[in-house]
Amino acid sequence: MRAVIQRVSRAHVSVEGTCCGKIGQGILVYLAVHAHDTDEIRDWITTKIRSLRIFEDESGKMNRSLEEIGGAVLVISQFTLYGDCRKGRRPSFSNAAPPHHAKKQYEAVIADLKQTLPVVESGTFQAHMHVVSENDGPVTLILEKEGDQAPE
Image (tube, rainbow, N blue to C red; front, side, top):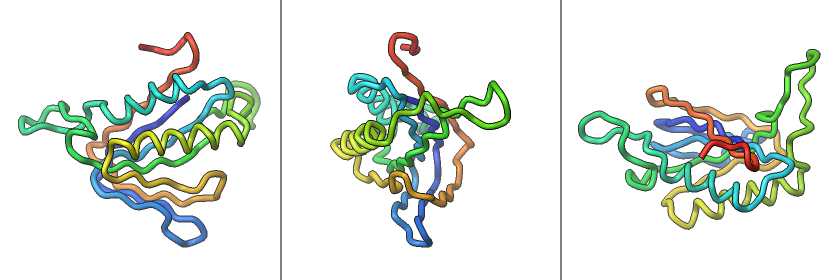
């Protein structure tokens, strides 16, 4: 699983001109599911999203997590994060999960986050979306775990 997370002041996503997810202070997550992702990998990434200390404390240091600040999260499915551009000019998406597996894992990430966070919004799986965000910092990080080769 691969996620690009951005600390935001606000973000929203729309499909065909209709807003389907909107948050204030929190994290915008672009999430891609690998063809071989497991529930254990999903649990790892969900825990990281919730508990990563990227929000400032009273001293101005990044010491507080999304859970600690009561922040919101907006999750957007984005299989193109697995686009391999090393050969030719057209990306290969062969490492991205097929839609049925990706949707199951994507929806499970959202459900897991809803168990502990006050506001969890999402885009629409497989839809053409427009995402608008106001980055805070900016703070942008990549989370990734694939099988045994992932960082701990």
